[in-house]
Image 1 (cartoon, chains in turn orange, purple):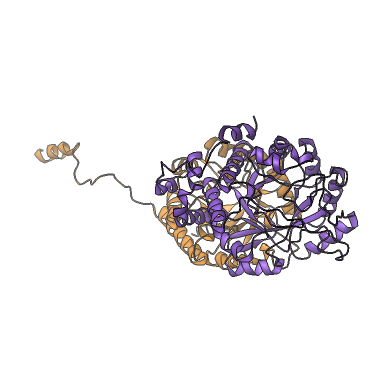
Image 2 (cartoon, rainbow over the protein chains, first blue to last red):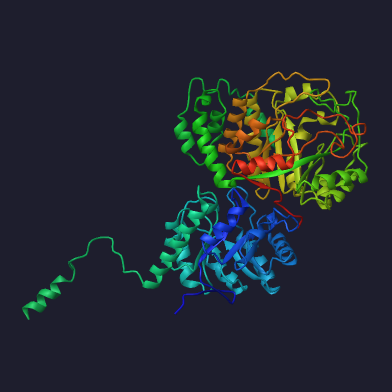
Length: 261
Length: 368
Protein backbone atom coordinates (compact mmCIF):
# COMPACT_ATOMS: atom_id res chain seq x y z
CA UNK A 1 0.00 0.00 0.00
CA UNK A 2 1.25 3.45 -0.87
CA UNK A 3 2.05 5.70 2.05
CA UNK A 4 0.24 8.89 1.11
CA UNK A 5 -0.23 12.11 2.99
CA UNK A 6 -3.70 13.53 2.54
CA UNK A 7 -4.16 17.24 3.10
CA UNK A 8 -7.40 18.94 2.21
CA UNK A 9 -8.42 16.12 -0.12
CA UNK A 10 -5.16 16.12 -2.05
CA UNK A 11 -2.60 13.32 -1.91
CA UNK A 12 1.14 13.84 -1.49
CA UNK A 13 3.87 11.23 -1.60
CA UNK A 14 6.57 13.53 -0.30
CA UNK A 15 6.49 14.73 3.28
CA UNK A 16 9.09 17.50 3.13
CA UNK A 17 7.52 20.91 2.60
CA UNK A 18 9.89 23.75 1.75
CA UNK A 19 9.81 27.52 2.28
CA UNK A 20 11.32 29.93 -0.23
CA UNK A 21 12.65 32.80 1.88
CA UNK A 22 16.28 33.74 2.67
CA UNK A 23 17.88 32.07 -0.36
CA UNK A 24 21.04 33.81 -1.62
CA UNK A 25 19.70 33.45 -5.17
CA UNK A 26 16.16 32.86 -6.38
CA UNK A 27 17.48 30.58 -9.10
CA UNK A 28 18.58 28.15 -6.38
CA UNK A 29 14.97 27.62 -5.37
CA UNK A 30 14.26 25.48 -8.41
CA UNK A 31 17.23 23.17 -7.81
CA UNK A 32 16.41 22.92 -4.11
CA UNK A 33 12.79 21.96 -4.74
CA UNK A 34 13.87 19.33 -7.22
CA UNK A 35 16.52 17.93 -4.89
CA UNK A 36 14.04 17.77 -2.03
CA UNK A 37 11.39 16.24 -4.33
CA UNK A 38 8.98 18.69 -2.77
CA UNK A 39 5.34 18.62 -3.82
CA UNK A 40 4.14 21.47 -1.62
CA UNK A 41 6.01 24.75 -1.37
CA UNK A 42 5.19 27.91 0.55
CA UNK A 43 5.78 31.42 -0.79
CA UNK A 44 5.35 34.75 1.02
CA UNK A 45 2.89 36.77 -1.04
CA UNK A 46 4.62 39.97 0.13
CA UNK A 47 7.64 38.94 -1.93
CA UNK A 48 5.77 37.85 -5.04
CA UNK A 49 6.16 40.31 -7.90
CA UNK A 50 3.83 39.05 -10.60
CA UNK A 51 4.79 41.83 -13.02
CA UNK A 52 8.52 41.34 -12.88
CA UNK A 53 10.13 39.25 -15.57
CA UNK A 54 13.24 38.30 -13.62
CA UNK A 55 12.09 38.74 -10.08
CA UNK A 56 8.92 36.68 -9.95
CA UNK A 57 9.67 33.84 -7.52
CA UNK A 58 6.76 31.80 -8.93
CA UNK A 59 8.73 31.31 -12.14
CA UNK A 60 11.32 29.30 -10.22
CA UNK A 61 8.85 26.74 -8.87
CA UNK A 62 8.48 23.48 -10.82
CA UNK A 63 5.09 23.06 -12.47
CA UNK A 64 4.12 19.90 -10.57
CA UNK A 65 4.76 21.55 -7.21
CA UNK A 66 1.70 22.93 -5.44
CA UNK A 67 2.09 26.53 -4.28
CA UNK A 68 0.74 27.53 -0.91
CA UNK A 69 0.92 31.28 -0.28
CA UNK A 70 1.66 32.40 3.23
CA UNK A 71 0.51 35.52 5.01
CA UNK A 72 3.96 36.58 6.22
CA UNK A 73 3.78 40.20 7.38
CA UNK A 74 0.24 39.90 8.76
CA UNK A 75 0.02 41.37 12.25
CA UNK A 76 -3.57 40.30 12.93
CA UNK A 77 -6.39 38.14 11.56
CA UNK A 78 -7.76 40.95 9.42
CA UNK A 79 -4.45 41.44 7.58
CA UNK A 80 -4.00 37.68 7.14
CA UNK A 81 -7.46 37.42 5.59
CA UNK A 82 -6.75 40.30 3.22
CA UNK A 83 -3.41 38.82 2.15
CA UNK A 84 -5.08 35.45 1.52
CA UNK A 85 -7.72 37.09 -0.67
CA UNK A 86 -5.02 39.02 -2.55
CA UNK A 87 -3.13 35.77 -3.13
CA UNK A 88 -6.21 34.15 -4.62
CA UNK A 89 -6.96 37.23 -6.72
CA UNK A 90 -3.48 37.22 -8.26
CA UNK A 91 -3.69 33.58 -9.27
CA UNK A 92 -1.81 31.92 -6.41
CA UNK A 93 -4.65 29.52 -5.70
CA UNK A 94 -6.62 28.80 -2.54
CA UNK A 95 -4.02 26.99 -0.45
CA UNK A 96 -2.95 29.32 2.31
CA UNK A 97 -0.55 29.01 5.21
CA UNK A 98 -1.71 31.42 7.87
CA UNK A 99 1.12 33.18 9.60
CA UNK A 100 0.08 35.91 12.02
CA UNK A 101 2.97 37.44 13.89
CA UNK A 102 2.63 40.45 16.13
CA UNK A 103 5.98 39.89 17.78
CA UNK A 104 8.90 40.98 15.66
CA UNK A 105 11.53 40.04 18.18
CA UNK A 106 10.94 36.30 18.44
CA UNK A 107 8.57 35.92 15.49
CA UNK A 108 6.27 33.71 17.55
CA UNK A 109 2.79 33.32 16.07
CA UNK A 110 -0.39 34.72 17.59
CA UNK A 111 -2.67 31.70 18.11
CA UNK A 112 -5.78 33.72 18.88
CA UNK A 113 -5.62 35.80 15.70
CA UNK A 114 -4.61 32.70 13.73
CA UNK A 115 -7.77 30.95 14.86
CA UNK A 116 -9.91 33.94 13.83
CA UNK A 117 -8.33 34.05 10.37
CA UNK A 118 -8.79 30.28 9.97
CA UNK A 119 -12.49 30.52 10.79
CA UNK A 120 -13.00 33.22 8.15
CA UNK A 121 -10.89 31.71 5.37
CA UNK A 122 -12.18 28.14 5.58
CA UNK A 123 -15.70 29.53 5.13
CA UNK A 124 -14.49 31.26 1.98
CA UNK A 125 -13.29 27.95 0.57
CA UNK A 126 -9.55 28.24 1.28
CA UNK A 127 -7.51 25.18 2.18
CA UNK A 128 -6.03 26.52 5.39
CA UNK A 129 -2.83 25.38 7.10
CA UNK A 130 -2.26 27.47 10.21
CA UNK A 131 1.23 28.00 11.66
CA UNK A 132 0.96 27.95 15.45
CA UNK A 133 2.52 27.73 18.86
CA UNK A 134 2.04 24.09 19.89
CA UNK A 135 -1.15 23.99 21.95
CA UNK A 136 -3.65 21.16 22.06
CA UNK A 137 -6.72 23.24 22.81
CA UNK A 138 -6.10 25.74 20.04
CA UNK A 139 -5.21 22.91 17.65
CA UNK A 140 -8.59 21.28 18.36
CA UNK A 141 -10.34 24.59 17.76
CA UNK A 142 -8.44 25.02 14.50
CA UNK A 143 -9.58 21.58 13.35
CA UNK A 144 -13.12 22.48 14.41
CA UNK A 145 -12.80 25.66 12.32
CA UNK A 146 -11.87 23.58 9.28
CA UNK A 147 -8.06 23.70 9.16
CA UNK A 148 -6.70 21.12 6.69
CA UNK A 149 -3.64 20.54 8.87
CA UNK A 150 -1.98 22.18 11.87
CA UNK A 151 1.59 23.42 11.81
CA UNK A 152 3.14 23.68 15.27
CA UNK A 153 6.61 25.19 15.47
CA UNK A 154 9.57 23.03 16.48
CA UNK A 155 11.51 26.04 17.79
CA UNK A 156 11.39 29.79 17.05
CA UNK A 157 11.36 30.38 13.29
CA UNK A 158 14.78 30.69 11.72
CA UNK A 159 16.49 29.58 14.93
CA UNK A 160 17.75 26.20 13.65
CA UNK A 161 17.50 25.03 17.23
CA UNK A 162 15.81 21.74 16.51
CA UNK A 163 12.74 19.97 17.79
CA UNK A 164 12.32 21.70 21.15
CA UNK A 165 8.55 21.42 21.43
CA UNK A 166 8.59 17.64 21.22
CA UNK A 167 6.51 16.83 24.30
CA UNK A 168 3.57 18.99 23.30
CA UNK A 169 3.71 18.04 19.62
CA UNK A 170 3.72 14.36 20.66
CA UNK A 171 0.37 14.90 22.36
CA UNK A 172 -0.95 16.77 19.33
CA UNK A 173 0.07 13.92 17.02
CA UNK A 174 -1.90 11.54 19.23
CA UNK A 175 -5.00 13.66 19.58
CA UNK A 176 -5.40 15.70 16.40
CA UNK A 177 -7.28 14.18 13.49
CA UNK A 178 -5.76 16.29 10.67
CA UNK A 179 -2.07 16.09 9.64
CA UNK A 180 0.41 17.59 12.10
CA UNK A 181 3.26 19.29 10.27
CA UNK A 182 6.21 20.61 12.25
CA UNK A 183 7.05 24.02 10.82
CA UNK A 184 9.99 26.20 11.88
CA UNK A 185 13.10 25.80 13.94
CA UNK A 186 14.42 22.49 12.59
CA UNK A 187 18.14 22.94 12.11
CA UNK A 188 19.58 19.67 10.80
CA UNK A 189 18.17 16.60 9.04
CA UNK A 190 18.22 14.53 12.25
CA UNK A 191 15.69 17.00 13.75
CA UNK A 192 13.38 16.26 10.83
CA UNK A 193 13.94 12.53 11.20
CA UNK A 194 13.01 12.76 14.87
CA UNK A 195 9.71 14.49 14.06
CA UNK A 196 8.87 11.82 11.51
CA UNK A 197 9.85 8.88 13.74
CA UNK A 198 7.51 10.22 16.36
CA UNK A 199 4.60 10.20 13.94
CA UNK A 200 4.37 13.75 12.64
CA UNK A 201 2.85 13.71 9.17
CA UNK A 202 5.32 16.07 7.54
CA UNK A 203 7.83 18.86 8.23
CA UNK A 204 8.37 22.27 6.68
CA UNK A 205 11.96 23.51 6.39
CA UNK A 206 13.31 26.81 5.09
CA UNK A 207 16.15 28.55 6.95
CA UNK A 208 18.18 25.38 7.54
CA UNK A 209 18.24 24.77 3.79
CA UNK A 210 18.43 28.37 2.55
CA UNK A 211 21.36 29.34 4.76
CA UNK A 212 23.41 26.15 4.29
CA UNK A 213 26.63 26.51 2.35
CA UNK A 214 25.21 24.13 -0.24
CA UNK A 215 21.42 24.50 -0.09
CA UNK A 216 20.78 21.90 -2.81
CA UNK A 217 22.72 19.21 -1.01
CA UNK A 218 21.12 20.14 2.30
CA UNK A 219 17.68 19.86 0.70
CA UNK A 220 18.53 16.34 -0.42
CA UNK A 221 19.77 15.51 3.08
CA UNK A 222 16.47 16.66 4.59
CA UNK A 223 14.56 14.64 2.02
CA UNK A 224 16.45 11.49 3.00
CA UNK A 225 16.01 12.18 6.71
CA UNK A 226 12.26 12.69 6.33
CA UNK A 227 11.98 9.46 4.36
CA UNK A 228 14.10 7.56 6.91
CA UNK A 229 12.09 8.91 9.82
CA UNK A 230 8.81 8.09 8.16
CA UNK A 231 9.96 4.58 7.32
CA UNK A 232 11.02 4.04 10.93
CA UNK A 233 7.62 5.23 12.16
CA UNK A 234 5.77 2.88 9.85
CA UNK A 235 8.07 -0.02 10.80
CA UNK A 236 7.13 0.38 14.43
CA UNK A 237 10.33 0.96 16.35
CA UNK A 238 11.20 -1.47 19.14
CA UNK A 239 10.68 -0.15 22.63
CA UNK A 240 13.70 1.51 24.21
CA UNK A 241 14.81 1.13 27.81
CA UNK A 242 16.93 3.31 30.00
CA UNK A 243 19.14 0.44 31.21
CA UNK A 244 20.24 -2.98 30.08
CA UNK A 245 17.51 -5.45 30.89
CA UNK A 246 18.71 -9.03 30.81
CA UNK A 247 17.16 -10.44 33.96
CA UNK A 248 13.91 -9.89 35.81
CA UNK A 249 14.98 -8.86 39.30
CA UNK A 250 11.46 -8.35 40.53
CA UNK A 251 9.71 -11.33 39.02
CA UNK A 252 12.65 -13.77 38.93
CA UNK A 253 11.31 -15.66 41.95
CA UNK A 254 8.38 -16.82 39.85
CA UNK A 255 10.75 -18.72 37.60
CA UNK A 256 12.43 -20.37 40.61
CA UNK A 257 9.06 -21.41 41.87
CA UNK A 258 8.27 -22.96 38.50
CA UNK A 259 11.55 -24.91 38.51
CA UNK A 260 10.83 -26.35 41.95
CA UNK A 261 7.55 -27.62 40.69
CA UNK B 1 6.72 57.38 29.66
CA UNK B 2 8.83 58.22 26.63
CA UNK B 3 12.35 57.32 25.54
CA UNK B 4 13.38 60.66 27.02
CA UNK B 5 13.32 59.16 30.54
CA UNK B 6 15.78 56.46 29.45
CA UNK B 7 17.96 59.06 27.77
CA UNK B 8 18.05 61.12 30.96
CA UNK B 9 19.05 58.11 33.02
CA UNK B 10 22.11 57.38 30.90
CA UNK B 11 23.00 60.75 29.44
CA UNK B 12 26.29 61.07 31.32
CA UNK B 13 27.63 57.70 30.21
CA UNK B 14 31.19 57.79 28.84
CA UNK B 15 32.04 54.73 26.79
CA UNK B 16 35.58 55.95 26.31
CA UNK B 17 36.24 55.36 30.02
CA UNK B 18 33.54 53.03 31.34
CA UNK B 19 35.53 49.81 30.92
CA UNK B 20 39.01 51.18 31.51
CA UNK B 21 39.21 49.60 34.95
CA UNK B 22 36.85 46.65 34.49
CA UNK B 23 37.27 45.04 31.08
CA UNK B 24 34.82 42.23 30.38
CA UNK B 25 35.49 38.76 29.05
CA UNK B 26 34.46 39.12 25.41
CA UNK B 27 34.02 35.35 24.98
CA UNK B 28 31.45 35.31 27.78
CA UNK B 29 29.64 38.32 26.38
CA UNK B 30 29.47 36.79 22.92
CA UNK B 31 28.21 33.46 24.24
CA UNK B 32 25.01 35.03 25.54
CA UNK B 33 21.78 35.21 23.59
CA UNK B 34 20.51 38.17 25.53
CA UNK B 35 22.79 41.10 26.14
CA UNK B 36 22.35 43.62 28.93
CA UNK B 37 22.85 47.37 28.48
CA UNK B 38 26.23 46.86 30.13
CA UNK B 39 27.24 44.18 27.60
CA UNK B 40 26.08 46.43 24.76
CA UNK B 41 28.09 49.37 26.06
CA UNK B 42 31.12 47.10 26.35
CA UNK B 43 30.78 46.07 22.68
CA UNK B 44 30.85 49.78 21.81
CA UNK B 45 33.79 50.59 24.07
CA UNK B 46 37.40 51.33 23.19
CA UNK B 47 38.38 48.08 24.92
CA UNK B 48 36.20 45.97 22.62
CA UNK B 49 38.09 47.24 19.55
CA UNK B 50 40.58 44.44 20.09
CA UNK B 51 37.90 41.84 19.48
CA UNK B 52 36.40 43.02 16.22
CA UNK B 53 36.98 39.70 14.46
CA UNK B 54 35.23 37.74 17.23
CA UNK B 55 32.34 40.17 17.07
CA UNK B 56 32.25 39.92 13.29
CA UNK B 57 31.98 36.15 13.32
CA UNK B 58 28.95 36.17 15.56
CA UNK B 59 27.37 39.22 13.91
CA UNK B 60 27.61 37.45 10.57
CA UNK B 61 26.15 34.24 11.95
CA UNK B 62 23.10 35.87 13.49
CA UNK B 63 22.53 38.06 10.44
CA UNK B 64 22.51 34.98 8.25
CA UNK B 65 20.16 33.17 10.58
CA UNK B 66 17.70 36.04 10.83
CA UNK B 67 17.77 37.44 7.33
CA UNK B 68 19.59 34.93 5.11
CA UNK B 69 21.79 36.30 2.34
CA UNK B 70 19.21 38.78 1.16
CA UNK B 71 19.38 42.57 0.83
CA UNK B 72 16.34 44.80 0.42
CA UNK B 73 16.75 47.56 -2.18
CA UNK B 74 15.15 51.02 -2.13
CA UNK B 75 15.79 54.53 -3.32
CA UNK B 76 14.85 57.99 -2.03
CA UNK B 77 12.65 60.36 -4.03
CA UNK B 78 13.13 64.05 -3.18
CA UNK B 79 9.89 66.00 -3.62
CA UNK B 80 10.71 69.42 -2.19
CA UNK B 81 13.79 71.17 -0.83
CA UNK B 82 12.17 74.19 0.80
CA UNK B 83 13.03 74.21 4.49
CA UNK B 84 12.33 76.38 7.54
CA UNK B 85 15.10 74.89 9.64
CA UNK B 86 18.65 76.07 10.12
CA UNK B 87 20.43 72.79 10.88
CA UNK B 88 24.09 73.63 10.58
CA UNK B 89 25.03 70.32 8.87
CA UNK B 90 22.37 70.24 6.15
CA UNK B 91 22.54 71.39 2.54
CA UNK B 92 18.85 72.31 2.50
CA UNK B 93 18.99 74.63 5.55
CA UNK B 94 16.92 77.77 5.25
CA UNK B 95 19.73 80.31 4.91
CA UNK B 96 21.67 78.32 2.32
CA UNK B 97 21.55 80.13 -1.01
CA UNK B 98 20.77 77.17 -3.23
CA UNK B 99 18.40 76.40 -6.05
CA UNK B 100 15.18 75.07 -4.51
CA UNK B 101 12.43 73.11 -6.12
CA UNK B 102 9.13 71.45 -5.38
CA UNK B 103 7.72 68.85 -7.74
CA UNK B 104 4.23 69.15 -9.20
CA UNK B 105 2.12 65.98 -9.15
CA UNK B 106 2.89 65.48 -12.86
CA UNK B 107 6.60 65.71 -12.12
CA UNK B 108 6.22 63.26 -9.21
CA UNK B 109 4.58 60.81 -11.60
CA UNK B 110 7.41 61.23 -14.09
CA UNK B 111 10.08 60.57 -11.45
CA UNK B 112 8.09 57.63 -10.08
CA UNK B 113 7.73 56.06 -13.49
CA UNK B 114 11.47 56.49 -14.14
CA UNK B 115 12.43 54.88 -10.83
CA UNK B 116 9.90 52.04 -11.14
CA UNK B 117 11.36 51.17 -14.54
CA UNK B 118 14.64 50.29 -12.81
CA UNK B 119 12.76 47.50 -11.00
CA UNK B 120 12.68 49.12 -7.57
CA UNK B 121 9.45 48.58 -5.64
CA UNK B 122 10.27 50.28 -2.31
CA UNK B 123 10.49 54.08 -2.26
CA UNK B 124 11.44 56.60 0.44
CA UNK B 125 9.77 60.01 0.18
CA UNK B 126 11.77 63.07 1.29
CA UNK B 127 10.64 66.66 1.70
CA UNK B 128 12.15 69.64 3.49
CA UNK B 129 10.63 70.86 6.73
CA UNK B 130 8.19 73.45 5.46
CA UNK B 131 4.54 73.24 6.32
CA UNK B 132 4.04 76.10 3.86
CA UNK B 133 5.70 74.51 0.79
CA UNK B 134 5.28 70.82 1.58
CA UNK B 135 2.29 70.44 3.91
CA UNK B 136 0.89 67.03 4.87
CA UNK B 137 -1.88 67.51 2.27
CA UNK B 138 0.76 67.83 -0.50
CA UNK B 139 2.62 64.74 0.74
CA UNK B 140 -0.67 62.83 0.80
CA UNK B 141 -1.37 63.70 -2.84
CA UNK B 142 2.14 62.66 -3.85
CA UNK B 143 1.81 59.36 -1.94
CA UNK B 144 -1.36 58.56 -3.87
CA UNK B 145 0.54 59.03 -7.14
CA UNK B 146 3.45 56.92 -5.90
CA UNK B 147 1.05 54.15 -4.85
CA UNK B 148 0.47 53.38 -8.52
CA UNK B 149 4.15 52.54 -8.97
CA UNK B 150 5.49 51.12 -5.71
CA UNK B 151 4.68 48.20 -3.38
CA UNK B 152 5.97 49.99 -0.30
CA UNK B 153 6.18 53.71 0.50
CA UNK B 154 8.15 55.11 3.41
CA UNK B 155 8.52 58.74 4.44
CA UNK B 156 11.53 60.67 5.67
CA UNK B 157 10.00 64.04 6.43
CA UNK B 158 9.61 66.48 9.33
CA UNK B 159 8.18 65.14 12.61
CA UNK B 160 4.39 64.84 12.56
CA UNK B 161 1.64 64.33 15.11
CA UNK B 162 0.16 60.86 15.58
CA UNK B 163 -2.97 61.91 13.73
CA UNK B 164 -0.96 63.18 10.77
CA UNK B 165 0.96 59.92 10.60
CA UNK B 166 -2.36 58.10 10.57
CA UNK B 167 -3.54 60.23 7.64
CA UNK B 168 -0.44 59.32 5.64
CA UNK B 169 -0.86 55.62 6.48
CA UNK B 170 -4.41 55.85 5.15
CA UNK B 171 -3.01 57.40 1.97
CA UNK B 172 -0.67 54.44 1.47
CA UNK B 173 2.46 54.98 3.58
CA UNK B 174 3.72 51.93 5.50
CA UNK B 175 7.17 53.01 6.73
CA UNK B 176 8.62 55.90 8.72
CA UNK B 177 12.26 56.96 8.69
CA UNK B 178 13.19 59.68 11.15
CA UNK B 179 16.63 60.34 12.58
CA UNK B 180 17.27 62.04 15.87
CA UNK B 181 20.56 63.13 14.22
CA UNK B 182 22.18 63.51 17.64
CA UNK B 183 20.89 62.23 21.00
CA UNK B 184 23.01 64.57 23.11
CA UNK B 185 20.41 67.19 24.00
CA UNK B 186 22.86 70.04 24.36
CA UNK B 187 24.63 69.40 21.07
CA UNK B 188 21.22 69.00 19.41
CA UNK B 189 20.26 72.43 20.65
CA UNK B 190 23.49 73.98 19.37
CA UNK B 191 23.32 72.40 15.89
CA UNK B 192 19.62 73.04 15.26
CA UNK B 193 19.89 76.77 15.21
CA UNK B 194 16.25 77.55 14.53
CA UNK B 195 13.07 76.19 12.98
CA UNK B 196 10.50 73.58 14.01
CA UNK B 197 13.16 70.85 14.25
CA UNK B 198 14.67 72.64 17.22
CA UNK B 199 12.11 70.92 19.48
CA UNK B 200 14.26 68.00 20.74
CA UNK B 201 11.52 66.05 22.48
CA UNK B 202 8.95 66.38 19.69
CA UNK B 203 11.59 64.88 17.38
CA UNK B 204 12.63 62.21 19.88
CA UNK B 205 9.07 60.95 20.31
CA UNK B 206 8.21 61.01 16.60
CA UNK B 207 9.09 57.33 15.97
CA UNK B 208 6.88 56.36 18.89
CA UNK B 209 3.98 58.43 17.51
CA UNK B 210 4.49 56.69 14.18
CA UNK B 211 4.36 53.28 15.86
CA UNK B 212 1.18 54.23 17.70
CA UNK B 213 -0.35 55.37 14.42
CA UNK B 214 0.36 51.92 12.95
CA UNK B 215 3.49 52.28 10.83
CA UNK B 216 4.68 48.84 9.74
CA UNK B 217 8.36 49.71 9.72
CA UNK B 218 10.22 52.38 11.65
CA UNK B 219 13.79 53.34 10.88
CA UNK B 220 15.71 55.54 13.29
CA UNK B 221 19.23 56.87 13.03
CA UNK B 222 21.98 59.24 14.08
CA UNK B 223 24.04 61.48 11.85
CA UNK B 224 27.52 60.26 12.66
CA UNK B 225 30.09 62.98 13.13
CA UNK B 226 28.03 65.33 15.27
CA UNK B 227 29.04 63.72 18.57
CA UNK B 228 31.19 60.86 19.91
CA UNK B 229 29.99 57.84 17.96
CA UNK B 230 30.10 55.43 20.92
CA UNK B 231 27.66 57.49 22.96
CA UNK B 232 25.37 58.09 20.01
CA UNK B 233 25.40 54.42 19.00
CA UNK B 234 24.55 53.49 22.59
CA UNK B 235 21.45 55.71 22.60
CA UNK B 236 20.46 54.60 19.13
CA UNK B 237 20.57 50.96 20.29
CA UNK B 238 18.59 51.78 23.44
CA UNK B 239 16.03 53.73 21.43
CA UNK B 240 15.60 50.84 18.97
CA UNK B 241 15.21 48.39 21.85
CA UNK B 242 12.71 50.66 23.57
CA UNK B 243 10.57 50.75 20.42
CA UNK B 244 11.00 47.04 19.73
CA UNK B 245 9.93 46.10 23.26
CA UNK B 246 6.95 48.43 23.33
CA UNK B 247 5.63 48.08 19.77
CA UNK B 248 6.19 44.41 19.13
CA UNK B 249 4.35 44.27 15.81
CA UNK B 250 6.44 47.06 14.25
CA UNK B 251 9.66 46.24 12.42
CA UNK B 252 12.39 48.46 13.83
CA UNK B 253 15.53 49.26 11.89
CA UNK B 254 18.44 51.66 12.21
CA UNK B 255 20.57 53.74 9.88
CA UNK B 256 24.16 54.79 10.38
CA UNK B 257 24.74 57.74 8.02
CA UNK B 258 28.10 59.48 8.27
CA UNK B 259 28.03 63.16 7.58
CA UNK B 260 28.83 64.16 3.99
CA UNK B 261 29.81 67.51 2.60
CA UNK B 262 27.36 69.83 0.84
CA UNK B 263 27.22 73.35 -0.54
CA UNK B 264 28.35 75.65 2.30
CA UNK B 265 30.28 72.87 3.94
CA UNK B 266 30.14 71.88 7.60
CA UNK B 267 33.16 70.48 9.41
CA UNK B 268 32.26 67.42 11.49
CA UNK B 269 33.86 67.63 14.91
CA UNK B 270 33.71 63.93 15.68
CA UNK B 271 34.60 62.20 12.45
CA UNK B 272 34.82 58.41 12.73
CA UNK B 273 36.85 55.81 10.90
CA UNK B 274 35.60 52.83 8.91
CA UNK B 275 36.73 50.69 11.83
CA UNK B 276 34.51 52.69 14.19
CA UNK B 277 31.56 52.32 11.85
CA UNK B 278 32.07 48.55 11.63
CA UNK B 279 32.25 48.25 15.41
CA UNK B 280 29.05 50.23 15.77
CA UNK B 281 27.08 48.14 13.26
CA UNK B 282 28.28 44.89 14.81
CA UNK B 283 27.54 45.99 18.38
CA UNK B 284 23.99 46.89 17.41
CA UNK B 285 23.54 43.63 15.50
CA UNK B 286 24.73 41.63 18.51
CA UNK B 287 22.54 43.61 20.92
CA UNK B 288 19.45 43.49 18.69
CA UNK B 289 19.59 40.42 16.42
CA UNK B 290 16.27 41.17 14.68
CA UNK B 291 16.77 44.87 13.96
CA UNK B 292 17.18 45.96 10.32
CA UNK B 293 20.29 47.95 9.33
CA UNK B 294 20.33 50.38 6.42
CA UNK B 295 23.47 51.66 4.70
CA UNK B 296 23.00 54.52 2.27
CA UNK B 297 25.00 55.76 -0.70
CA UNK B 298 26.84 58.15 1.61
CA UNK B 299 29.41 55.38 1.92
CA UNK B 300 31.74 54.34 -0.86
CA UNK B 301 31.29 51.22 -2.99
CA UNK B 302 34.00 49.14 -1.37
CA UNK B 303 32.94 49.83 2.20
CA UNK B 304 29.27 49.21 1.44
CA UNK B 305 30.14 45.82 0.02
CA UNK B 306 32.39 44.90 2.93
CA UNK B 307 29.78 45.92 5.48
CA UNK B 308 27.16 43.48 4.16
CA UNK B 309 28.08 40.42 6.29
CA UNK B 310 28.01 42.30 9.60
CA UNK B 311 24.29 42.87 9.70
CA UNK B 312 23.20 45.10 6.82
CA UNK B 313 19.69 44.30 5.59
CA UNK B 314 18.84 47.22 3.32
CA UNK B 315 20.75 49.44 0.89
CA UNK B 316 19.80 52.19 -1.51
CA UNK B 317 20.60 52.15 -5.20
CA UNK B 318 20.37 54.48 -8.18
CA UNK B 319 20.28 57.43 -5.82
CA UNK B 320 20.12 61.19 -6.33
CA UNK B 321 19.70 63.76 -3.54
CA UNK B 322 18.29 66.45 -5.82
CA UNK B 323 14.61 67.26 -6.21
CA UNK B 324 13.73 66.03 -9.68
CA UNK B 325 17.17 64.46 -9.90
CA UNK B 326 16.08 61.64 -12.20
CA UNK B 327 13.98 63.36 -14.85
CA UNK B 328 14.32 67.15 -14.71
CA UNK B 329 16.84 69.05 -16.85
CA UNK B 330 19.96 70.21 -15.03
CA UNK B 331 18.61 73.72 -15.18
CA UNK B 332 15.38 72.62 -13.53
CA UNK B 333 16.48 70.26 -10.74
CA UNK B 334 17.37 71.50 -7.25
CA UNK B 335 20.83 71.56 -5.70
CA UNK B 336 21.94 68.38 -3.92
CA UNK B 337 21.23 67.81 -0.23
CA UNK B 338 24.64 66.15 0.02
CA UNK B 339 27.20 64.40 -2.18
CA UNK B 340 27.06 60.67 -2.74
CA UNK B 341 29.99 58.30 -2.74
CA UNK B 342 28.23 55.34 -4.33
CA UNK B 343 26.60 56.49 -7.55
CA UNK B 344 25.95 53.06 -9.03
CA UNK B 345 22.72 52.27 -10.85
CA UNK B 346 20.16 49.73 -9.66
CA UNK B 347 21.42 47.28 -12.29
CA UNK B 348 25.03 47.65 -11.10
CA UNK B 349 24.09 47.20 -7.43
CA UNK B 350 21.98 44.16 -8.33
CA UNK B 351 24.88 42.67 -10.22
CA UNK B 352 27.25 43.34 -7.33
CA UNK B 353 24.91 41.64 -4.82
CA UNK B 354 24.52 38.57 -7.02
CA UNK B 355 28.28 38.39 -7.47
CA UNK B 356 28.73 38.44 -3.71
CA UNK B 357 26.15 35.70 -3.23
CA UNK B 358 23.29 37.89 -2.01
CA UNK B 359 19.73 37.91 -3.30
CA UNK B 360 18.62 41.46 -4.12
CA UNK B 361 15.07 41.83 -2.79
CA UNK B 362 13.03 44.32 -4.80
CA UNK B 363 9.62 43.68 -3.32
CA UNK B 364 8.93 42.71 0.26
CA UNK B 365 5.55 44.23 0.92
CA UNK B 366 2.24 45.08 -0.67
CA UNK B 367 -0.57 47.32 0.40
CA UNK B 368 -3.16 45.15 2.22
